[in-house]
Amino acid sequence: MNTRISIIASIVLLLFSGGCGNNSTSVSDINTGKTVRINGVLEGGETQIVILEEMGAREFIPLDTVICDDSGVFEITISTDEVAFYVLRYGPAGYVTLLIEPGETIEFSGSYNNNVSYQIKGSKGSELLLKLSLEHRKILDALGEITRKNMELLPSPDYATQKPLFDRQFDSITTGFYEYSSHFIHENVGSLAILVALYNLYGQGLPVFYPEKDLHVYQFVDSALMSLYSGFEAVDLLNAQVKEAERALSDEGQPKELQKGEIAPDFVSSRIDGSQLALSDLRGDYVLLSFWAGWSRLSRDENPTLKRAEEMYGEQPFRILQVSFDDSREIWTGAIREDGLDWDHVSELTRWETPVADLYQVEKIPCNLLLDPSGRIVDTDLFGDKLLEKLKIIFSE
Image (cartoon, rainbow, N blue to C red):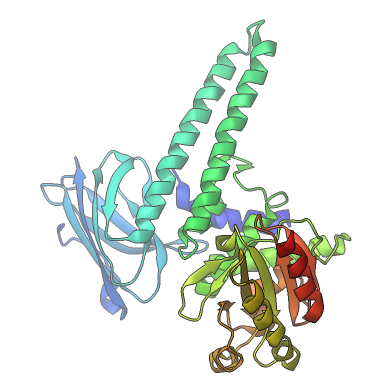
């Protein structure tokens, strides 16, 4: 588990290293995708070189080299079919990471001698990376200050009494950024920027999210990104790692079935209209989480019970979320329409290959779990009268 995580981390951690003249070497002319334009200005960047590279999974691919004019203005134009990470190199301090969609026109401004402070507009993904990067930088600066004070006091006889204070400060800062990063991930489930949040470090060997302890976070990001970016190499690597980790846990004798009282693992999937829905979006209500498929006769036979439950308790804090294991949109939506299932529906249309199948160890459908308003599992294997009786008990209390 650690080996594969390290491989992926080394790939993604590349994201955080440290109008121009026409003297450019560009591959944009041979691309056939949508045009991307970066209109930039660098304070102190007069006649200086700016380089744009695409960030591959294991290497940087040069795309364009331009020279700023006498006012520090530059322009880069490329053509691309797919969303991708890029780096904009300038000055002596490193580079800026961008997350660009095809067709974007980006306004960039900064200082030639400073790759930390810059402004960007016209690229939502790049704006998210800047937001995350600024927060990350504040945390690193705060931790650096604690480290400096710790080293200064190391020879002091008071060090033993001061060290617990430093430790508490360190824990408070890292806990705060852990929570910030978790919120960032859940608020931006449709963006590859959450991949960067997942692999952020406080320092060498100090990840924000530990694979062993925070596998649920890796699983959530996996479910969010695989639904939109299957085929993106870093996302596919993450998916493979999560599956390997889940198999390893199973091999170690961990229970395959989720237990009552546990927090149900969060995940993200796609509605019929293509928008994203996270399980955690339904917190505050009792949720019947139902795994099914339009092609499954047993699932279709259970749907009248779900309809009855909704009719009886729809005015209560109660919702139904059905996760489909279909691979045909027509069969999926046709079954919803024919059975009159007027509630939340999501599917990746990949049959049993959807990440949530592994996340919940679903081996047969239909499969129903009832969650309380905090997201904890109240009961499992609720079908027919057993489901209706359970709901009656809950809403009669």
